[in-house]
Image (cartoon, rainbow over all chains, first blue to last red; front, side, top):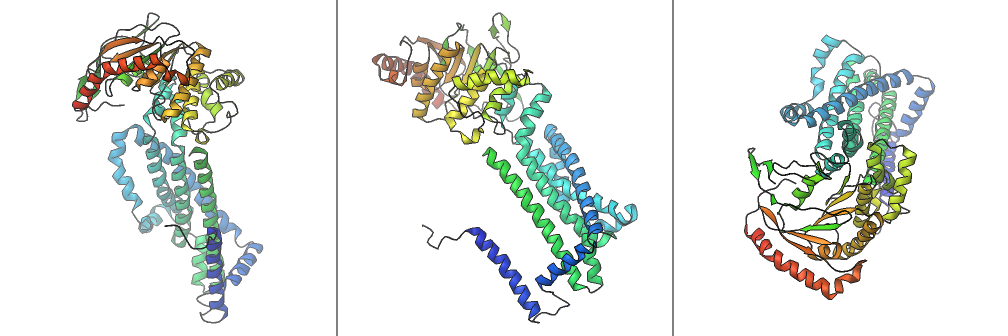
Length: 254
Length: 260
């Protein structure tokens, strides 16, 4: 059946929903329908955030969160790709360990925070530790799948051209597996960001997540929402950039 | 020539895929192997390519026994095998690149090959932008770029429609005439076999032997109108007579799973 409703560009609908949602929040808080201690208006959130940025209040927290996120992601990326390749190359070992990896995926790692506090103290180390573990899982799994899915004929092309094992790996297999590895890295980065901010609620004294918690404790609703807004902006921007990068790569290939 | 393989249950079984193929190729000749499906055509070609080891029997090129892929042999596969992350030029350069030929030099060689296979103007396109027939030309160009003496082609046009096959077949004949390679071609398509080849080897059902060798005496150059000639029909009919019995056997027998 042909679609009969008027053709509207999907982006318009998507933006309308966001604008509408923000407008409703604005009306709810300005009209006094929801108390100021619970919700401040979006315009006030932006204004407060602007003020905090100008006052240089955000910078140390932003830097801390970014350092933790990128440090965890870098370790997860390097180790995760290496382990993923190992699990593909030694398929029996890979099959043996896969259930553990998948289980870690499903585990709320946050619950280990008392242990981490004891062993690693307060601050960045426990956060980087737990973030790396969360981030590495999708990277390992996707890397292994990426190498497993390479068609037999690609190996044959390499052999018939008499590639050395290193040439086969670097010029054929690794590039062939790249789309999967990239998907793993994309998920890994998003997890790294989410887990870092989440863990900052409980395990640290600095960072964007910590600030949300801090202002919540102080009943400073306006600043709390300003930091929530900033976290949203960072997470959404990272997501958009990564999806675009992935899209560009797939477009070249399919 | 037997071929040892691991059966799905994990035990090593020896499948006698190809029993007796004793055949010499002449330089610059276009020879096609045709046979019922599952008769071991691809296995034979991969043994010649050095990609599989024969458990009995040998393949020689100029008295040199083939055990590994030989530099004088290029191979084009049935499946789509271009590298999607490389441009057409980079795909064609692959063989020379792994041999360590400097970039300038290999680009010059590859440009010439790209023109021979009719992909001029697509050097910087990625394979995804090309049709199935064009992708196979990229694969052919990639195999030709290292200047092999012998080109092995395993049903390279199997995935293409009939009309595209005829035209790309004509292109292949042109490329073959331009480069003077020896081509060993595998197909299950009788028309394609007669249209392209100097000689057609007909293989029997497993364990395969060469059941007949048919000389194709249709004069060259041939083109897409060749298939309308009287002689073409005589030869394809003759081939079908030989093949029919074998194909029936192949259909009647439960097929052993031959790893690809």
